[in-house]
Image (cartoon, rainbow, N blue to C red; front, top):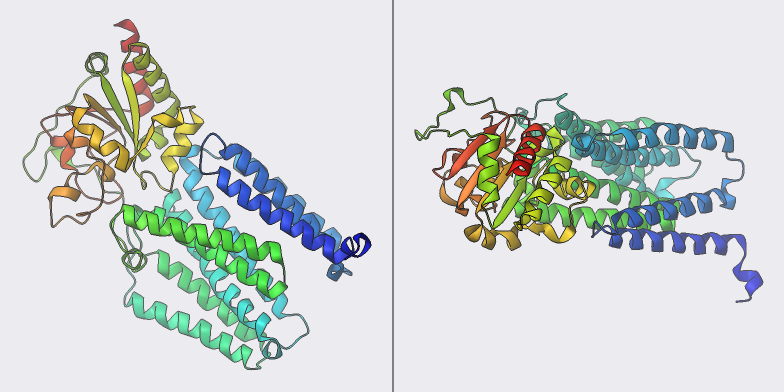
Length: 470
């Protein structure tokens, strides 16, 4: 092939797509480490820019309303950039859910728009089948992500919302969507049938996520992320767009792997999560007691500082409470104060701590915590036996020893951080409220445990101040 032929318009666009998804893969690979994550994000974003420009150069777009495309790009930029810059770290999980939903919704709308083009889907099944698939999965992802956003934002109860005969209703809705799709593929030109696909899938997306409790949100987010990726890949097949196919498959595959890892981290099957999880915010326990008759022992920042000052190894166990209090920077300053005294500090990271996969890693990376201090669950659990003090900051369910010891507990068998094996445990909490699983944590009543009540950021700052005075 001569250079002149190679640089024909179509070949140039294909080459640009190859460059784009090469940058997607490179960016994703760099996201595996906090030290290269920012660079990876920029590379992937540049790859998306290349893909968009290549698409706009496509000769098939002759006659397209480029003014309308420009308006869309401007509106998206105006909404997206400030939202991403101004979002609080505590709201990052719901932002991820919302942005993921927008992707699924965009795919569903693209499928609808493509259906309205003047050609017979029944004569082009290689286009029709992925188009129907994209419409169903994209619509489910959009509406399911909206429900996940509502639960995380507190607009909808984090507790499971049970739907009467919910499983059968969901199966019926899926059957309706598939049936309407088959009718279209067999030759029906009714736009009403395509709208029926979108509506049935939309209701299914809502009803599928409503019964899932807050404790399962990390799994839900990664599952919906995989759905969006698969729907985008299907749309790419229908549109013969290589960049969309590859990008969608990358997102779909990574989301599927992450879903599997999250489910294993909770020792639950993906099916049990999607068929209705457990959990939800529970009220504070009255009187400070426990069903087993235990007693809470409270402490002060000054006493905690003394305990930490005489430790050789301290393990910080972050949870959603740290995110809510935005205490990650205060925690980092406390760690520096301890390190100046020759005390070894490590961070115990549970895979499902927080409200999205990797939530604690993101928070601590923002506070410039050295990556080598972040220890995954399997690496840190053998360390608790020789840990002088474990400092639990807003982590509830991932430190609950009932997961190991109580066979009738809802979380029995779930891998946890073995904080109770430490010599001393300090728990920072606002109150005795349960976590998102909605169950009591006997760690809080243990003989080696003391509770420091109050805002985590203020409490940690006070501990750091007391350490400076010692």
